[in-house]
Length: 433
Ligand code: ARG
Image (cartoon, rainbow, N blue to C red; front, side, top):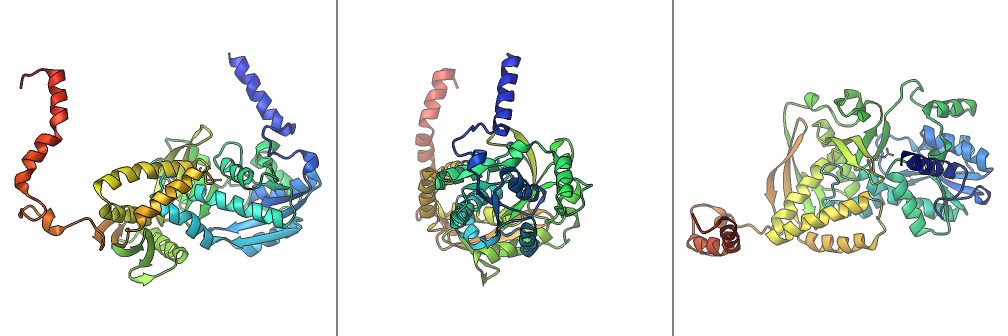
């Protein structure tokens, strides 16, 4: 039995390096002439930029997408691509599109996967891959290359997008096949004059970030019994070091989306950046997450999601206030479906659009203001206000009876409401009392 499994494993592993295609969209060496490389400027994709030119004798067009990665210098990334031989190096600022078409629907869907991950990477990948398709076509490329490994969700998201939107384009994923470890990549970089930033000695965390959050993987994070080391938090202040004074902010929503911060109207990108900044200061949005990946593995991630940790609970609170009990019960089921679909790399699946239509319908009434109190790592709803709240303070107090609510009617309701449960109980436990 074990031998059978081993054989299968060996076959699949070598098939990609032998370039026997395991999927119709993978490129055969002979058909690769001009490659659109999704270029981050990091070690993997820099090595790849050279490696593709050597290995395939192909031209490389580098595309770098700005989704709001904090502190990135895109001029430097572009220069690096050109110096490494890219025939063209493009940087696209896609922050507005990312916020409008990807984060906004995620807010309406209260999108969280596995109880803690607000999906920032999962939301970014389909957009990055869509832009890769557009630029590949514009530059006459036949192939798209990305730097994902064979163990993650990101390869699924990117390749599913390319195969859906551009069946004529092929894909190569060199990291999946080249079997270079980090040390070999560094050696390759040295040999080919590829600059390595941040010093090669210390293995950095594997980072992915954008406007909506940041993830770190690797090193001690892979040891489940290892508590987070402080150097992993590059964004959020350690809660212990956050100010002793709390801060309460007012988030204004219109039709399900945040539109103002403390009364000041802001576009979504700027609002998210400002909320993230305040959240960072107060140590808000640290998530230590074990995740069920779509490719079967469980992996631990450390997330820093200061904006999401404030905006999502505020939105959910307001939505529950304007929804009926029945809408609210149903919504969380649909929210979970939405989050799973997007996590799983099926952004272009029609079900997602169907669900979005429902999300939009519900969010039509999600208008109002939520007060969030931030204090040493926590973000808590403290005030709510909405013209559409299905709430009547008069009805809610204990003291009064009358109007729409008669306390005298409650026992009759209880008798009918519990009828079937009482009958079933008797059938199982006999008539005795
Ligand atoms: N686990 C998260 C996800 O699957 C984050 C992945 C981060 N990606 C990366 N290439 N470091 O969406």
